[in-house]
Length: 85
Length: 139
Length: 94
Image 1: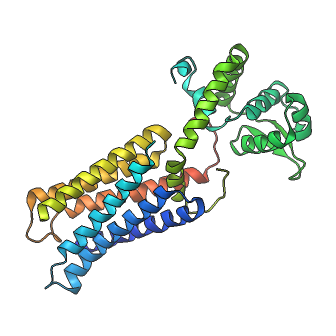
Image 2: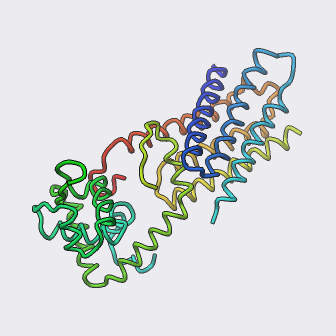
Image 3: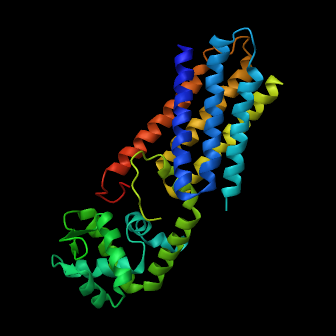
């Protein structure tokens, strides 16, 4: 059950990232680029969780997967703060 | 936004979303007064004393916003006030009398909305990025 | 290190939620409300992990927070698309 949830989260994040990248290419609004990168990080976080669970159960990917989520969130905040007027 | 406190929310929404420029305001007031008569773009431009180059896109926006109806070939369309919505009509009536009474108040509101729209440009782009079907809207 | 990362994630999610709430108030765009709540719930996910500190993070019931957060995002996107497809009719339906 958990793995389906993580897969759904990863998929949703990827969709958000793709939509935001497309929007950025159209309008060149930097906020969209930063947001897209954030969702990429969240997608990586969820996807790596599945990898950690099934592909490499003997290796602990905690730092990589949690780190990617944190990097994504920091990038998002960077974009949101820069955008604030 | 304190000066807007006298205007009902429906009118403020109207100014925020559908009647966003002076050309649009003058055009809709003209069409409403003469409803159900249909006007062409040159006729409206003469009546409101504004250049066609401004009036034409203003009417397209009003049509897209569902406030006027368009008929005819693209390039030579005629516009009329859209009847049928009481709420809309009431709001425009209030707007019309407010504009007659204090045009500077309305124009001030419209420019403040315009500034707000520019400031929130990035967030609007963010929200619109999530629309799957790609429609190229102005701005 | 775990606690630090979870704590940082909780904070960044909550701050993001607050930014989205501000955008919602400024633009009246409902999508931002969905994103705001979604990121707040995501923050709860990280907060929960740091409180419980499960030995096996993957199977813990906390994943339901993640599910809720992303379901909210999906619902928000669907809602946005449906609203954009409808031509505006009455006042207040934008």
